[in-house]
Length: 529
Image (cartoon, rainbow, N blue to C red; front, side, top):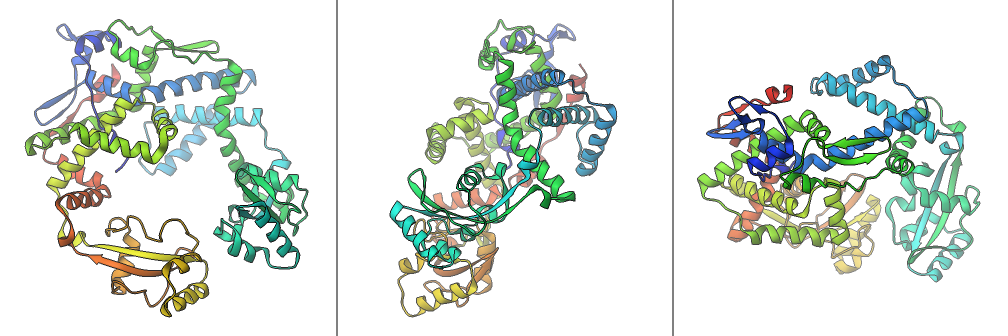
């Protein structure tokens, strides 16, 4: 399900509270600006107050952060005496317009974004210029071992002349690419820890670390395959490398500028408070940063300008689904939303879940409401577009994945003479679990390439495929555990299967559902106001 369409949850403030918070002038015959229509879905009107609340809830934190960052970036640019010319902006806008092929944002927004991007690049280059030493590249191969003694044994074998890559494939916990870091030469910014370890060891090309290197709970043996100086990068390759370095450093620029400016980012009035209080005003200061501050009015302008059209489409989606749910008598119980939320917490962990919330800039309450809408949308679309019987067959397989066809054929031969699957699995690049492809019983929509490959060879349950299959750059030895027809699904499993099938075509199904309603939009009039 696309991120845009997945955020169509709405909670509406009372008109009085939101009118005070927005502080918009009265329009028409005594009515608040918040009462003005911005759209209609069938017989249901969408009001400006609904839109403002939705934008504040789901885009407010991100928009506020961007306003702060832009202000601090301008102050940092002034410190370095940097300027952006109109010609530079014109060129950047032309690049963006060409790349968008007709789907570009309005010109004014494009120019604002171009100015911000250019200033970001110039500040980045002034603060952390790319030097020749930054363009040095290393080609490193490593083995990761459980114990120090295992690492010492591997070093001893390598000194006796055993091929290091072969030792990695046989002994290392990480076998991907034969232990080759980044699958080729890499710069320091692309893998700082291993670049530093290889550099600190003062290795010459072809040498391995004389002693195991401690790495958390494991031990590393590192081999420097080759080293390339800055002079080996010329022309486009050098330009691309510099661009990659800038890209990696960009992530740290924001924090560095905020730290230097000593910005007061405690948000004396939180967005939650602004939304829920009835006495907030357009002049309420949300943040102070350097010489500037951001008010609630600044935030409202940014929200309408940058997120208005997108948020309106999401409100339309929300209204369509809500009306369809009412027509079909479909509801979502609290327990359903709680169960989905608990699964997310379990999958991400407590800190991971908090990181997700921070990244989205929303509260846990808002996230739960988003989940509730997602479940409601899934149920509505499953009811309107039930899965066809042909879509409900499932395969369950176990596999061993290796790097070469020769190794795959050797494993297949071992299987033919009765080698236990668990023994074969030890030779796989993927040794976690029991060798099942996930989900354990997968639909065509879950694993379309694998499903179609099995259908093509007419795979029989309980048998290994007669030939290994090539997927990407690795070879798969596959045993078909079962092929399950639609009749094996319980009612709940059928619903779950329909949800998974529809998830891949959610947007198109929602667009089809929209066609049942007359939809009107009048956001431009509000934007101009």
